[in-house]
Structure formats: structure tokens, C-alpha cells
Length: 224
Image 1 (cartoon, helix red, strand yellow):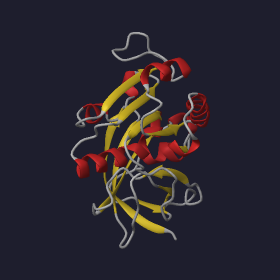
Image 2: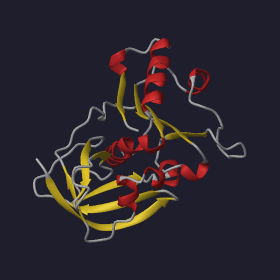
Image 3: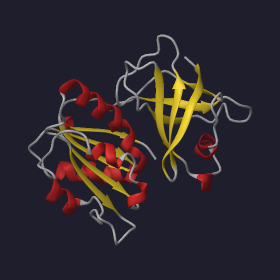
């Protein structure tokens, strides 16, 4: 089912990422980690759907997204960055395989962090702590790290940031490969959540399996 939503506010999160707040359709329900197929409600764009994840919590009266723009693509995300309050969008019913299945290690690449935002926020709100949870978040440079201060301030959450295109960073400067994971995870503890570019998701998943982690402990959704 298609639902029309109206933009209430848009604010920058990083140099190329925005936080958007929309009206919420009546009786529209979703779970943390779920996404929707999103399109701009204007001529020439209604058939250009893209998957974006809700970053708000299920009980709020608005729908929120954190969306990274790619101006060089001349596409939907570039248009989203230019949206103004009052503009309309179209969303479909929520979907997605990523949901909170308990404490564990959350491994994200770039905009792949978005399913984990609502999951970690809700877990923190309900439990009061994220003890037993680790976030491994890979980006190109430090300026690309989405919501870094919020993650660092989450009670009980262990954060490990790494960048791949910046040598003089204050965080790790390594790819999330087998050696990196060997140094930063405990294969015996909890679930392993993965989201990011397809190649990263596949490689991390295979690496985790090589450590003896069973399929049922690996949760992933592929986003570009």
C-alpha cells in the first residue's frame, strides 16, 4: 500500500547526510530496523523508488530518516537533499530482515548504519544500557561518520570506528577484514548484525562463518 507523507524538517547530519522528519500516516506501524520503498511525490520521480530505513522509534508520531546523498549520481538522493518542508514523498509498507535479536556486534559500512540507529536507540530506551553491544562502523573519512557523538554517548555501547581513505585519523585506519575482525570481536558472544555495501556484507559474513559463527547468529540486509 502506498502512503503519502509530508516533510516537516530537514537538517544536515554530516557534509552529505541529512536528517528528515515527515508526518506519519495513520495506523502505519513498523519495527526498528525495518525499511520502506521511498519515492519523491513529484512528476518524473514517482517511479524512482529507493530503500531507506526508519531511524525514529515505533511509538513516535513522526517518521524519520537519515539519508546520505550522492550528487554525482544525479538521482533520488540528490533530490532528497534539496527537499523543503511541505514537500511530499511516497512510501510503501515496511519490510526488512534486520531486527533486534539481542545483544551483539553491529558491523556497518557508511549509510548501512541506518537500520542500527533505531535498534540501538530502542534497546537503550527499554534497557537503560547497551551493555553487551559493540558497534564497528567503517567509513571513508572521519567527516563521514554519521551520528558519531550520539553513538559514543550511548550508555554501555562499545564503539569502534575505522576509516579507509584517511591516514591522519583519530580512529582506526583499516578495512574491516579478517585480521581486523579477529582483533575486535569475540565469536562466542551474541548475534552479529551486518549492513553496508553488498561486497562488504558478503565478505564480513563469510569471515564470520570462517570463525565458526553459525548462520543463525548472522543477521544482515544489503544496502548500497
